[in-house]
Length: 70
Image 1 (cartoon, one colour):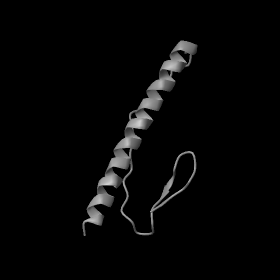
Image 2: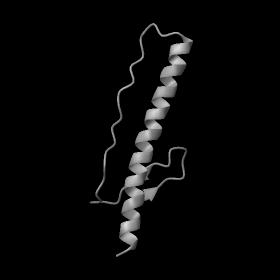
Image 3: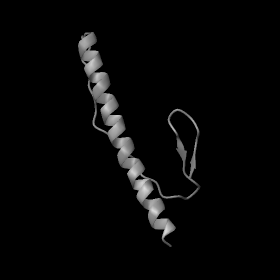
């Protein structure tokens, strides 16, 4: 895999590599949301993105460790 040196550290898998797809829970924002609600929803979304990112990275970290043991 190749990881870009960008703000999101995007990962390009090698051709024919195994991959996972992480999907988080939906965050709904009411159309009439005020600033307080928008901030709460922003934090909710950020927390969910951090959670699924950590889950995906732990998958790849454990995979790299098991590959090193071969």
